[in-house]
Length: 461
Image (cartoon, rainbow, N blue to C red; front, side):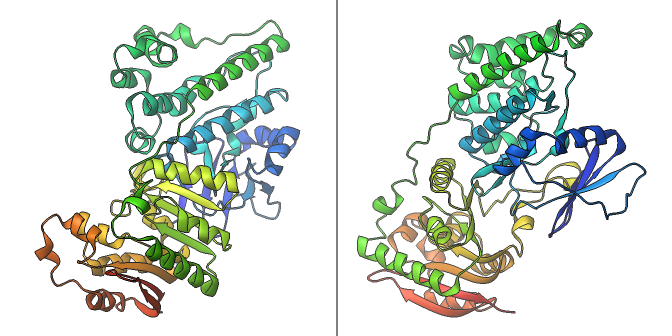
C-alpha cells in the first residue's frame, strides 16, 4: 500500500502509513488544536467513538519551527463517499450536525462540512479531521460551511430520493458535492417548486446569478447569546431537513436472490452455510473481504466468528440493508458499494489523495470470500479465470474461500444466454488448475445435486 497524505488544510498536513496516522500542526493551527484538546465536548465524542483519538507526540522533533506532531490510531480500512450508499452518507451528515451543536456552547465550530472529514469504523461514522474544529467568533451568527453542507450532504440525498441518483455515482463525478445550479436540472419539474426542493436547490440556483461581494460581508449579532441562538436555530433547521431526507432501505433485485435463484435448494444452501461455518471455526480469520456480499449473510457469519469484515457489492440497496443490520447488531462490518470488476479508482491531485480500492485492499486481509461471484466475473465481466485468482491472491495474505459454479449450473447458463459454446472447455478441473497457480487446496465440498463446489484455499508463499 502506498502512502497517502493531505495538503489542502493550511493549518496542517497528514501522512498515513501502514501503522499510524501522523499529523503536523503548523503554528497557525496551534490555538485551535489547544482548544480541541481542552474541550469537554470533544472528550465526550472521543469516548463515544465518534471522534478520532488524538495524542500529542512530545518526543517527536518538530519538522517546522513552531509546529507540533500529533498521532491518531488508524481507522482500519479507509472508505470514501463514492463507495457509500445513501444511509451511510446520512449517518455522516447526522454526526456532522451533532458535532456542530455540541461544540457551540464552547464557542467552537466546524470550518468545513464535507463527508471527507469522516471515515467508518465498521458501520459507525468517525470524525477524523480535528483541524476542522476551530474557535468561533462569539458574535458571528453565520455558519460559513452551511452551503458546503448542502452541496455535500443534503443535495446528494435529495437527488437520491427524487431522481434515484445513486450516492456513490454522484461522488465519483462531484467529489466536492453538487451545486444547486447543477442539481436543479435533475429534479422532476413540478417537484422542484415545493419544499424541501425549493429551498435546497431551486431558489439557491436562481440566487447564484445574483452573487456579489456584498453577500460575503461579515455580520455580527448584538451579543454572544443572540449569535448562539441563531446558530442553534439553524442547526435545528438543518436537522429537520436531514430527517426529511432519511433514506429508505427497500427490497432490491438481490433481496430475493437466495429464494428465487434456481441453483439452490434449501438443502444445498444449508450445506453451503455449514461448510463456511466450519471453515471459519478452523481458520479463525481476523480480517475478511467478502466480494459480492449480497444480503450479507456470510459477512455476518464471519463477524460473529470474530473477524473484522469489509463487504462489497454493486447493489446499493443490498449494501444499505447490510449496513443497517451491522449497525443494529454492533457487528464489525464495513459495507461498501464497490464493483470488484471495476473497483474504485485512485483520485485527487496526481491520483494521490484517494487510493484505489485495490491499493487499500492489497495485503490487508487474511481471508477473502468469493462466494457465488466467480461465474459473474467470468461471464458478465469477461475476466479470465487466471486473472481472477491473481487478483484474489493480492487481496488476501492467506485464505481464500471460493465457490465453483460450472457450465451446467442453471445460473451459469442464464448468464451465458446462448453463448454456452464459449465456456465448453470450462470445468472443475480447469478451475482447480487455475487455482493452484496461486493457492493450495485445503478443503472442498461438492454441493449435493449441483454443478457447484466450495473450496478453502491457502495462498502459496
